[in-house]
Amino acid sequence: QVLPGAVLAAVLWQMLQWFGATYVAHVVASASVTNSVFAIVLGLLAFLYLVSTSLMICAEINVVRVDRLYPRALLTPFTDNVDLTDADRKAYAGQAEAQ
Image (cartoon, rainbow, N blue to C red; front, side):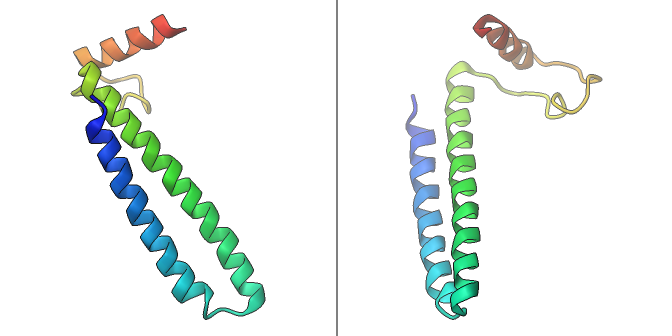
């Protein structure tokens, strides 16, 4: 049940590691000592943000797939003037039951 999200998370993890290693090797290595510290700190913060966001999206993909919570109205979080789909109602009912 969780294989698609797990595979996608593994692929994204490997891509982010490759990009991070390339970033450190090319950008940080050619910077001065002071600038390299800032580059590493900002790069690490960006890396952690991207990893956490991608892992959450992969987990959400699994939940949506298993619970069949699609199709969903995309504007629901931003406005109240949206026609709810059956999947929206099911998701809201699940959230209400969890509370």
